[in-house]
Length: 343
Image 1 (cartoon, one colour):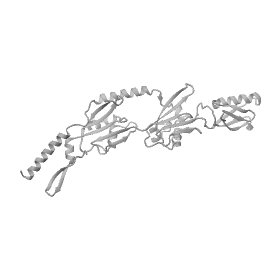
Image 2 (cartoon, one colour):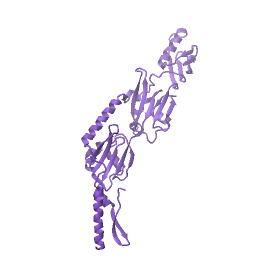
Image 3 (cartoon, rainbow, N blue to C red):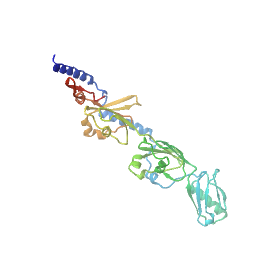
């Protein structure tokens, strides 16, 4: 057998073995687009039911400059003004026993009173002994008796004194900013004195931090717990240019994620792009097969990626062969070489 025929014979054997080895898909689809989206919608509904006590703050809560029904306590610094005479004005700090010391009146117990209630109490005491119709104003210069707790993706999470009125951006600055893994949402838990229950507020950090929407800059109250979870992540593997793990933003689509991964490689099977999602508490998984035409036809811009999703681009047999084949020059002359591009 001549050398040329031998090379052709070996190539035929090689190609046959290669085609046989590459025929099997890594992931087999077990659902279609309609079923995939229906399951996702059901999960979202269940989640919404579970999180029904989490609400978006009303416009009044988001933008108010009012500190609300703050209850006075030890350490708070108050500016007490009596409009009828400056001699009775005083800057006082609430003692550990919850009292303040005022001219003429001496010690006045203000523990667990609002500023308005403390004003009324002082007016009543002054009216009984000293003034006919006193008018008193209390300004809280420092809110110390309550603290705020910062949990999650802050650079310095912890518990901080609520020294003065703060908004969410101020609180983030106190903790020296967000960590690199911070997600796109914040949750503020606040105790409601009227209902005696916790209220959970949801804040869109994408709107606030990245887009500068100050309407989301909610006033943080003493006693609030601010939680910022880590961002979700997805995994891209297979016939893409830059496989790896990618952080998720709100509303990120499969097209955006594939673009982040550098797009499909030349040896990708454009009819077998797999989206794999865990369901049923991680015990089962859905495998959806999409084509490049599906992505270009609008599905790619509407199919949102969720935390822990896997995008896997299958390799095509012919694409892998042509992407890996080439020519080499050796001591026996010109030959054919192959390097598997998927490795």
